[in-house]
Amino acid sequence: MDITCDQSCDMGYIYLQKFSKHYEDNYDKSRLIASNQPIEVVDNVYLKLNKLNWPDKKYTDAIMDGDFIEEFQNDLDDQGYIKGIELQLTESRLEYLIENYKIATFEFNDSQYYYIAFAEDDAVFDPQNYVYTFSDKENAFVIVSRSEERRFQITLNEDKESKKSLSPKIAFIRAIIFKEDSPYDVDYLKSLKLYISSEDY
Image 1 (spheres, one colour):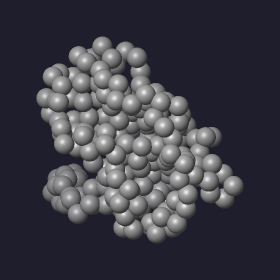
Image 2 (image 1 turned 90 degrees about the vertical axis):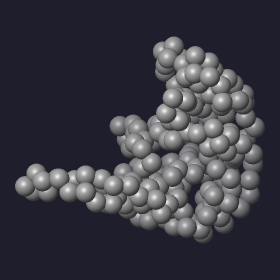
Image 3 (image 1 turned 180 degrees about the vertical axis):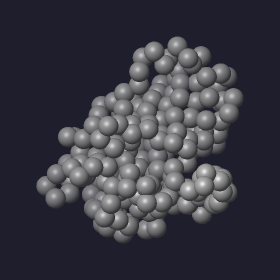
Image 4 (image 1 turned 60 degrees about the horizontal axis):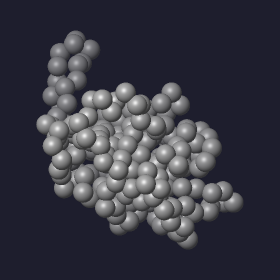
């Protein structure tokens, strides 16, 4: 998994699908954080997942319905799966992400699943979190936490007059759950590499 950091504005991007080689030219330094990250085998994850909220809608539908907004704007592929996460990436948040990054696998309903975590277990499996599928295939899901944070947004009414209002709650991605027949490649995700645009943190 590749992460880019632009220190001039404390912004970052997590590539959940393979990083394009030409992007490396735009970053001064790269650092391999984890190579062949071990995959933990965990039992009874479904007990933790059952405590979360499972709305009967896809991730894209939840956004369109105004259930939440993304931290910035995540990129989706043509089938609605998240392929990249745009986020504020300060030094402390980067350290937190690297410290809690892990890949685990578990069995559920006679199928093998993987999950990649971007936060500690208590934050991933908080009972107030929500789980959304990406497609009708239900071969990959995202766990999000809806914060109390909002931001002002500008909308246009029918007369094309601008109106300022508060956005829905901002949601933060805590983990991705997926099967092998999903667009996510566990071998790619096992190696964590950081690309830095200027001086090291």
